[in-house]
Amino acid sequence: MTNTPATAPTNRNAELAAGLARVRTRIADACAAAGRDPGEVTMIAVTKTYPASDVVALIGLGATEVGENRDQEAAAKAAEVAAAGVTPRWHFIGQLQRNKAKSVVRYADVVHSVDSVRLARALDRAAGAERDRPLDVLLQVSIDGAVGRGGALPGSADPDAGLDPLAEVVAGVDGLRLTGLMAVAPLGWEPDRAFARLAEVAAGFRVQHPQATLLSAGMSGDLEPAVRYGATHVRVGSALLGMRPTLR
Image (cartoon, rainbow, N blue to C red; front, side, top):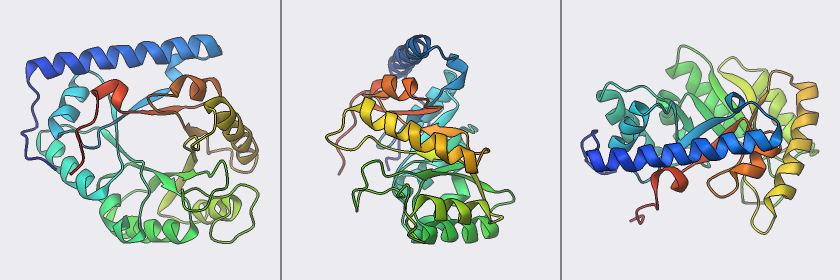
């Protein structure tokens, strides 16, 4: 993480304001096409590789939700943003190793990528020790069933990786609050096909877990079909902040 001060120059503010306006227009247009209220869809600004100053500027422009996918970067950035007196709602959206659970629960308000019972139990233990309120979690769904890409398996009875067994564990512990599902369109799948499948899974899931109403789906390149199929949260990076700096 860079040591850039948590204030953005005026020209960067203008760039971010323009990006935010474009994304908000896309979401509003997608909602209009789907017959949905734009207020039903929340934009998460995915700020991985971008400095804390961009987060501070975005919150000043009216954004409220920020997403990160690597704990080492996110923990330091959240601390820098907090030191600047800014308090966004932090979403951890990347694949998460169990040994990072204690760190993540200290700053994240929501974790989108819970995909195994072992991870859920690690987060529950960490949340009980580090927080005074439950951690909101979404269960990551594997749309194509591919092993190694992350995501719990719908229809599987596997006690560690099946979606239903995982949901029962999360719903039954004190440190976590089950709020919905998350997915990423698999490589090689058309977004409409992927998000139609996710919507089907979500509809069945809510029969058993009616409180799990959130659906995190769609990114810069496919937010429109995600909204069409019921996404309540879209995770937007490059369309909002520009092309990412090269990772080192």
